[in-house]
Image (cartoon, rainbow, N blue to C red):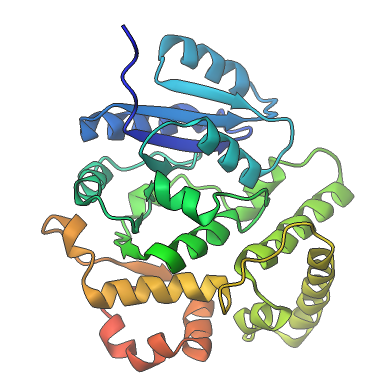
Length: 314
């Protein structure tokens, strides 16, 4: 008998997260089972050298719903793309193998699937229609900013239903950005610097940001710190000019496009369709992010009082 085609594909890229991977996959399996539709889990791994590859291989034998894709380069965006290309589901749910997801996201995902909207769901766990991902061009091989790069293109074309919950349990196990990137590094101090520079280069590409945008995020730092950051950002911007991957031209900074899309979705009340009578969304923002929005976003400035119920300190 032929296997039932999955309706939902949980997709991830993984590298050296054996300490967190079992809990993450267990939580994703629980979410899939709560949806009561056929699902699959596709993980692009590698090259992990902490035992994660072997653990995933054993798991894929025990659970035919798990597929493992091997990649030879330590590139998160490429891993996202490979996992997506291997998947078959009508709905794509990217996940982070360093996170164990709260079971309360199951009902949110189920209500989102029932709507059948071309918009994508933005929460602590994201879901997108396969057709929307394909129409927007999919993930690109960026090692930083790969999600903003895609989400901005999907949002510009199809829109978003924003329902971040702010539930702290869902983020309790998340790796910091520096710790995450160091798992991708083999070598000493110079290798670490090259990796962080490449991440910043790709974040500039994915966000279609300028050095001025990045400095606006850091305007409250000390003078000496800002001088160092400007030099580093300028070096990353020069590297971005030589990258074969060009920024998606959507008329403005793609990070700002995504943030304003979320804010507009809050104000429109789209979240009621997936909240099931639950509390309003909560979007945790750092003080730097709040100040950047106040400086650059007319949506935030003009409706700041209305948005105060949704934006909370991070």
